[in-house]
Image (cartoon, rainbow, N blue to C red; front, side, top):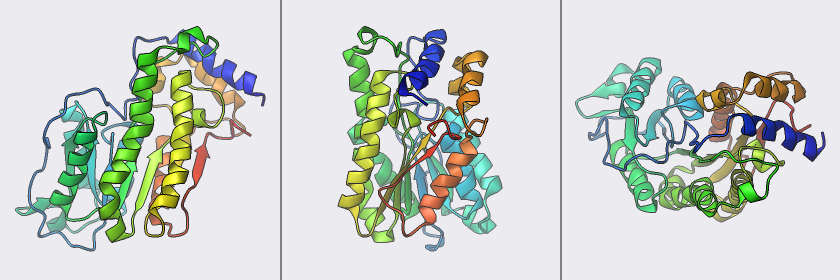
Length: 304
């Protein structure tokens, strides 16, 4: 498929749903920063053999789906959120119900296996606090799923509409720098557990498409960042990324049904990738001891 045709598909959609500002629902990076909003307690009674995953932007979409899958697979999980406290608490409750851990490990007077911590991914200081609180509460860190992202819809056929400096600054801050700051903050802990650092990139970082030029370019930068971090973090930490195509989350509701169907028809599998597909890939990255510096597109064959 020609790059011009791909761009046209996404541009038609973005013109239809042009919004003042869009934050991917799984990221919610614009909310206030505060201390942990749920489950603050000592974790001395947790089994040291239960791995711990920190999922940023974990209260909805890809983040929440991944949290649910990891809970079912025996992970203790910390989800990060920015502003929707009630939604984060609801997800924590779901994780407790889904967990395969023994009941005494899930919740007791010494600690909880599933926590929600509020932090602003646009702040380097908040990112450091998030990682620190996770380790204090859980005692270790095995997997960091860096899932935050930001975008604002622009006309992808217009250079003029894609030269808003504020868009570029925010996209670069959240789509690139936040992942770097998270890796730096977590490196010592992931070294100890020989863990995994995984990011959510985007198919828009692979071929010209997406909600804006700033989003597409910074997602491409994120993919390249992952490859460089894989070199820097070796040999103990694996660093990988997954790049979904259009997912039918709350965020995609802003696209018209016509635009979504046009995307689906251009995929070779005639379907949309799902948040569960992405979660399964994150789990594969978390478990594999032989994959690093890899970006996996999950776009149902749109790029082929």
